[in-house]
Image (tube, rainbow, N blue to C red; front, side, top):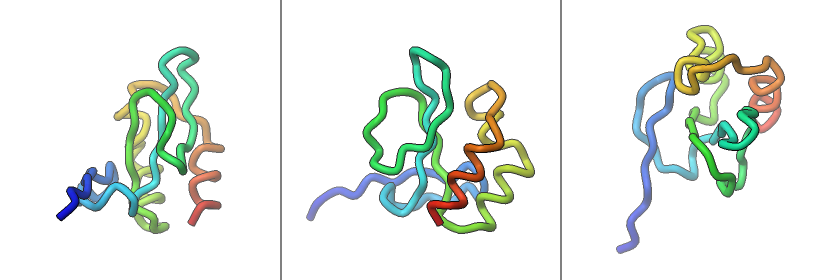
Length: 84
């Protein structure tokens, strides 16, 4: 049986399989916050469930800002909403 990695959503704090979550990454070199739909970028990552409730909760509670300890552009949340 193959191991399926699990990650925690920063909004609802529920553990889910990594493939069921959206990954957001802060690039180590530039410090830019970007979406990582293919989960291939290097850097510090955060995960959000693929539903609008968790995305809105993360935006309202500044979940990504707290996780990355820096300001997150509004367009990151908008791009994540488009992936849904």
